[in-house]
Length: 397
Ligand SMILES: *Cc1c(COP(=O)(O)O)cnc(C)c1O
Image (tube, rainbow, N blue to C red):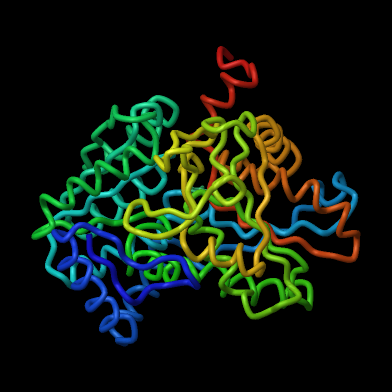
């Protein structure tokens, strides 16, 4: 193990990685720092974001949810409208540009719901990289559509059978692959987790969400939102939208974790609510652990939130009280998935449905003069089969 002095958010973050990866992490940090202010890089990233991903993403008012929830105005930042259907493409394209600069030939990724795998496979196709995506076998089952998409995009999906067959286990395997192949391979981490510099790089690429949303809210409502609500798996869509409002102390920043089927260990993945300080996947943060300090298998109906930890910047925002974190269970998320579909004509990802379910509780508390901005992190096509199964919706039409 080797630790690193930079990349801390308060007491969280840093770098706690095996020696074999230190050279690659240093190279990544160096390349990113030298690229990020270069005009050719900024121009290429901006053009890709606009002409390939479809940025800026829209800000949409939700009239029927606003009326039904009897409180604050509800506004949606539409990351579901990005190419490939979620915020993940913002980061995958950015890291692909860095990988090309480093002369790498292959991209690897972990994925839970498959959105990050699809985004990485897409970036790999666009730039001509080989691509391998690790995905837990439970997630392969519940997110079949995205598996087929990745294979069609030319990536190889490797199912992971260890542990609970979910995101944590896929991340373990991707890290193992990287340790063997680091000379020609870049590991595109999909959230604000992992060793320094990943949490910073991913945050920077996702900060476009918050920058755009801040301007759009001002333009459409004449003011900043009173609260910003986002679901938190590793925390990348939440950090992306929060980062636009961190300095606006009056704006409440609210992260929504997966409450799963209950508060018992193993039944949820609410890492800020139930986690303790620890070291995992190369960084110091909050993790759900057993009494012996082992990482706990966790659960959420939503594969993208099914991770036992949270990015170090969120841990810092939580302990410093700049952001608040709450949990929403599987059942409430499933109800909100259908409510958004039927009231607004928008099928959100199951991950995002957790943010809707919390906003529904918050809206009447905040009152009609307030505005709530929800990060609509992705679309729910990938979830329709699983939601139909769990909610008994007919599929034999
Ligand atoms: C991956 C994913 C998430 C969870 O990841 P974060 O890093 O916490 O954003 C949330 N929503 C969607 C649509 C996702 O694809």
